[in-house]
Length: 286
Image 1 (cartoon, rainbow, N blue to C red):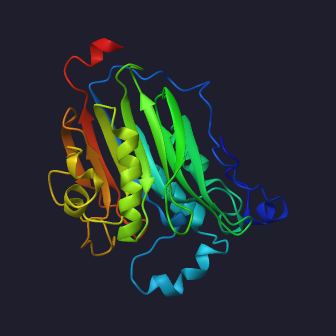
Image 2 (image 1 turned 90 degrees about the vertical axis):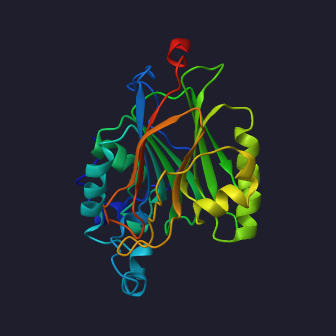
């Protein structure tokens, strides 16, 4: 297990800078098996800050830069949710800096949730002050994992691509956190569209900072054929959800068995969950 009892003082005295592309390796990760369905979750965890009101953006703003003694307890509660899923996309994680007590939050959540494979993408390195990161947690061994810098006027947005199953016809998961700017989103989704163009079975997951209708009709994803949650997925703000900013979009070859906005307000975003089934005949390719 991760050194869960390491306190913040120890971290401050022995800082460990976040590493680009840090991961758990694959020694103890089971192979991707021909399961009939896969449980997916995407969650913007806001570096472990429990936000329940707009005023907390002011009163809790210091927690974005300084240690907070209840942050580990918040992460443990998030881990309690994550252990119910097979593949998890995380946004707004800290890779190990002063504010997190020099704890890599992606690694911590993976180990606390009992998920053997994790991958941290460091997108914005502010040294000891912040290690802005995305994360992938997976119960199964991917064929490969690659990370990509997304185009943006201000660098710091990224995507993780994980491929599973058959090398000839893989299941491709793209985990991302898009910019707020619509212009930047157009460039970023154009980049993503090129990444997925050659694949049949695709899942896009993450905080996309835009509504599903806008994403699928007015961006480079409009001709992708991707399918959103069957129902409106309002995920932001977590205490009074009014906007669908977090998404799991899937190829029509993947059957959506179940999908929901999970009522688990541990951040300013609510998590999105989806249970997908692989297409008929795909399982025989393993």
